Length: 150
Image 1 (cartoon, rainbow, N blue to C red):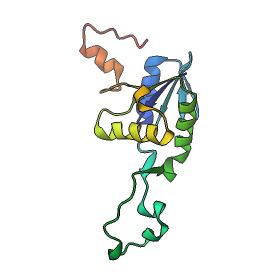
Image 2 (tube, rainbow, N blue to C red):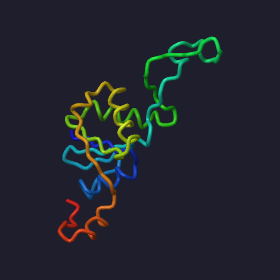
Image 3 (spheres, one colour):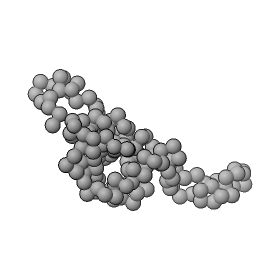
Image 4 (cartoon, rainbow, N blue to C red):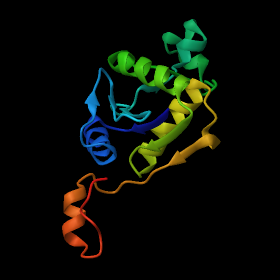
């Protein structure tokens, strides 16, 4: 299965329409047929672990505990845990993964955090840079570009 991971549901919807206009929306992803799936992260699916996630006593901040040092780690965002589970399940089944998160630093971080958390080798992920999710607009502005979505 080829898995495309977008940052936002809206971008996933537009990408899926380009891959296969008659796609099938599912819970947390879009099935484009022919073994192609598009899913999304809803922004940050993960958050950084807090000091108390490593040492419970650090939940109460005290001056004598400063400076604090702890490893960087990620934990599920409670608000988006259901979507995280969908993405992780799809990621485990994927034979090819394409990261289509936003082209800014936050978009890259969202993908990198996800792959690290999932234990997925990020060097096997292909990066797709999308700077506009409106294919018809791009077609109109370029006389040499075909307006076909296939």
